[in-house]
Length: 575
Ligand code: FES
Image (cartoon, rainbow, N blue to C red; front, side, top):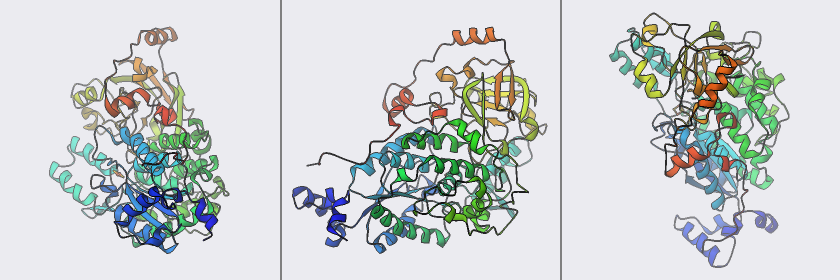
């Protein structure tokens, strides 16, 4: 490598000097046994790891990090693994989403503060992928994602069962008296049989699919099972590639273009992906300075056919998707809808990822003339109840409820809902629209995944399995139902959701993209004028920072002062 190239590397400002600072940076690193030539000017690659035993979906990431390291050494780089905070979706209270922005801050500042030239992001569980990408985008070094990969298919009593999706189904069956508690408890061991993320098309595999379609990972990253040896090989190849990306100065900002985001939206629709992708892509775009809005999801994604037959929209699991050809095969089928020339971490156009890909199972990855749903994308709903937008996932909804008008039954808080939902005298019918307030970014806080509230017990017992439900919350990517989410502004920020009363009529028209509270205009205005904002709940710590600065869902729910980036330069030394 030429001396000129060495001088160009950012890491030389840490490890290239012959002064006291250079001595200190190198000497302390050498206590790990690194030889002199590790500091000879080769690219230093940070492996940003969200490994944690409290994030079971990412518990194997230290093993994949070893694969990345092999590739980095092979390509003439120097790998250094570092931890950032991790977000265990199923383990954190009140919701992992509250801490996505905290992870993003952690990632951003760690990448900037250390003397590294490129980054490999190791994440998988729902909030870890977007949190890492948000932070990395605000620094803008060469960056590649390696995802956790899905767990092996769940197995119970000879059947495949899917993470999350079957939990919601089993739980409703227990409430309806169709499944015993003993059976319910027995199913949990069969559901989670290996390391990896939820093996349904939940938010984790949705985001991994979006990342692959955006060219931010190597091909096949999204669906290969966590324990498949090919994921270790993919990690190795990623390590090799990131070293070349540093030499090419192929930064994240060169890949986070509007075309790449639009490809991500198309892929999300084609795989029947999670509504959570909306809020995460908006937040990543905000960091990257890309003008992405809610309307782009309608414009680009709404009419895209859903061709991946995986739960919760369909019947198979992600292991099946991997064996059917994975994301390259999906992209091959929808290639006419993609920007073929969008850039990738390989430096090639995205079409190189899919042009030779084959589908090996037409029932898992459907042909375009036999899709799972003709228009599979997320729809944006606007109207007097959601002036800044709300979202619905038609592919996971009941066809007969996509256009529906009915009386509201309002729950003012999540506690209110939990206290009432099993009441045998609850005054609801299957035409009632359940409304839940106080679960948005500020209200919960953190915009929890509670929008798919349970069906009232008295209706479950009669066999009702879906109703229209509306809230300012999110919903798990593994969930299903006719569920209107992300109503913006949220109730706690003075959105019209705050003024809905039990008995008001609401009209949902998914086909037209409308959501309206059917009360007279004067009554609407009078209720809005009388609304009193709730007292701020939090007076200290991260909760207060979040409550005071979080943006609404239609802007990605980032903290307002984190939008944009600050680059990678650090002007002062530590000694
Ligand atoms: Fe971690 Fe689903 S809970 S991916």
